[in-house]
Length: 148
Image 1: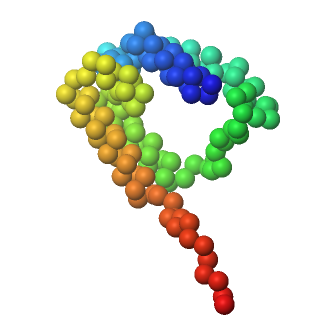
Image 2: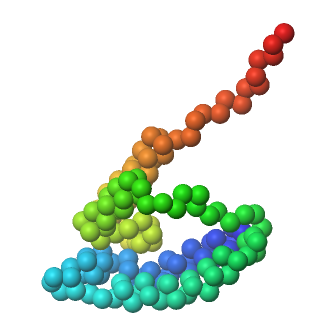
Image 3: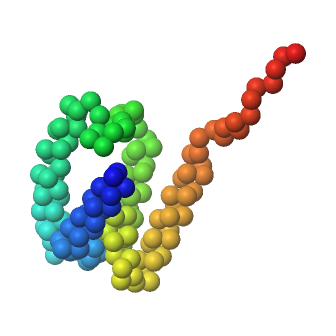
């Protein structure tokens, strides 16, 4: 059931990105070009997303657990630190340089361009590199030696 709900949510997200034109990097770059030919459409998409998200987010803040079981995955770190700022800056540089962020890039793979493929490969390599550098300590699973 959880997998089906995740699939439907992903499909709705992808369709929304496509219908709103947010898979078009020119639209994103136009939004970021506040000193030139500014395109405010991304602001309207963001406002719509915030409006739709508001009701379930308020419910989730008070709910003891998710509807489909398990636990909420709430952040344990809430402070703004140098890692958050550095990641935000890197994300912004990448977003502003090409006009893609991860969600729209993956959706746009249905009709890939060479720059999109390079972006997705670099995104995956960066994600794998981060996971490699910041991997949790290895758990061997070996039983402790007995003192005998």
